[in-house]
Length: 177
Image 1 (cartoon, one colour):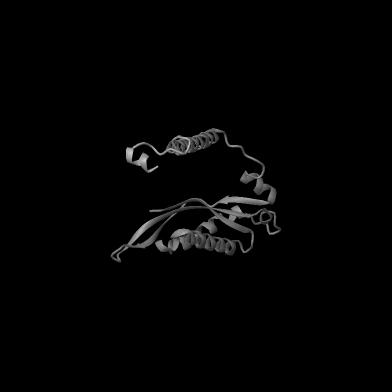
Image 2: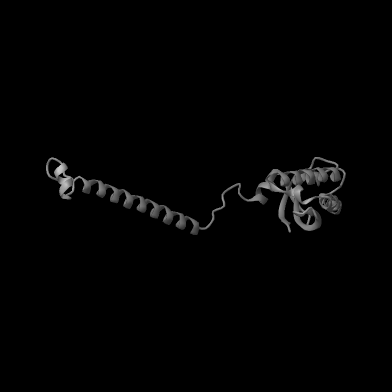
């Protein structure tokens, strides 16, 4: 074996066959197999994205809400000024654009009092605007800020309706600029 290294010839096993060729062939085959797997996966992914979306039972919001006795009430787009602080500590104003939708129990509209949630929409908007106008830019930062915002809007909706009928606040649009 030392003689083959000195002569510059490739190493051979006892039968005189080259050992470097087998290892190289294995690496080439492994690389070709890896490329084949990646290509098939990419092709399958592209094919899957081109297929039309299939809506299965329970995926449509309106059908699920109607069956469970819940109604969506759009409150409408609200634009307010919120205060913001710059890097140097100066106070400036930014716009918050939000379009909340109230999800509530349909039994509220069928109540004996004769009130309907749609009749309370102006009071809901007023309560929401009052709260949103007092916000600072940092109050709506991140997922915790959005969770606090939804919680406070839901609390105010329950105060306006004087009931537990409001279930959730859905945000259709949220822009802070």
